[in-house]
Image (cartoon, rainbow, N blue to C red; front, side):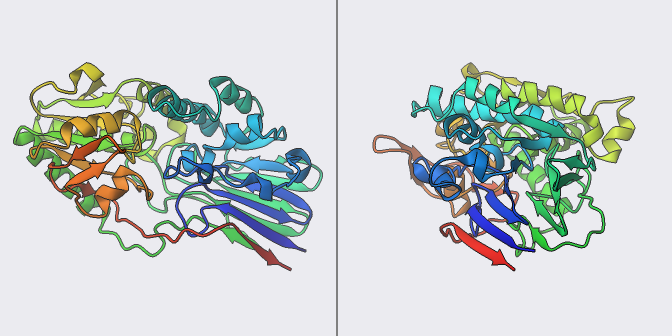
Length: 405
């Protein structure tokens, strides 16, 4: 038995998850993500390390994608449609449904709104998804005569999976992000008892000690309530899938209990489609949501409404969920420019922000000014940014190999 690992991204850094494992002669790429903090060649994995000649069909047996976040799937259409990989790609059914929404939203933000050179087109995304083979949880898939794969529930976001792989007498598991404790809309990760030769696991928060979820949620609700009670606006930059739904459930319930009338908004577009899929994929949610589904769909938010660009400068308090989550561009950046100069307003950061993004600069200590480019400087006077997750410092290193004999 021989195992070799080529780490093309997310080795001692957050972002651009991509690990190529050679196991008993089969070569599998796990995840094909992009780095949200870079706009140059460092944005994507260095695929030349997979095949110097670019013959990726011969170089790889298959690709496995753990979930739809861009740091795990963002480079996939570029790799399949621009670089030319035409082999099979495996992911769960929800990931196959939701990944195109994330990819198209990213493409629109970077090309249509920021004027960047297009890395892949809408047609590329559609053609890429045609190569995807969707799998169910605990379904054993025979990729070829020697290679078996199986997906296990990972929590984290809807459709996220940990993947078991068996080639001959060698067995391994690869995880993307996973949660060991349930939250409001997802259950805890579950996997069989296995005897493995290799485990590759996400470890972003492995050395981080967090406060309890209850205390973090209480701090969040207290800060939001205080801000809107004083007439301020709360900006919650978040990716449209996952954390957004979790926080909407939290705020929707709190608004009812406190009888608050201040409007909660979602930036229109992607989130409308996302919530439609979430309503359809109830079987992938927590047991509590499944049990109450016959009387109430948890994703029918009573207090959350659509937000349009024309409303940015409307008077009065409000809470707004806007994408993307790291304030790396798009609508969240547009709103931040308008709301950051006011001392009455608040920015909360519910997720990890990679180095190079405005979200990371805010989490690193409240700046008084942020240079957006050579001609644009944002005056930051809003309240001290509230980070719902502790920041983790990662050392960025080049790709490396691990060989196990």
